[in-house]
Image (cartoon, rainbow, N blue to C red):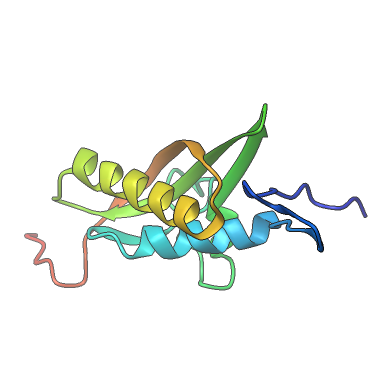
Length: 131
C-alpha cells in the first residue's frame, strides 16, 4: 500500500529529525473547524445519492474533506450540508476563514484555497416547516 503524501510544516526541519503531518490529521482539523460554523448541519459526502446530500457520520466525516497539494500549495475542498433559510454565501465565507485559520495555526503551513461545496440544504431541527 503506498504511503499517503504528507505535509511538511514550515520550520519542519529540526536537527533531531523532521515533522510530517499526514492528510488524516488535516482532515480532522478541517472537519472540526467546519462543524463549529453557524449554519452547518453536517459534513456531506462528495457524491449525491438520488440527487440528495448524504450526511456523513462522525466516523466517516473525513471523507467529506479532500486535500490537494500542488507546487507546495495546500488546497482544501469541504463538502457540507447547510441549514435551509440562512445566507449560503455568508456561511461559506465563515467556513473558508475558519478552516484556513485552524489549519495554518495548528500546522504552520499556508493554505492557498478552501473551496466550500454545498451539497444540500436541510431544514434544521428548530425550523417549523409549513405544509
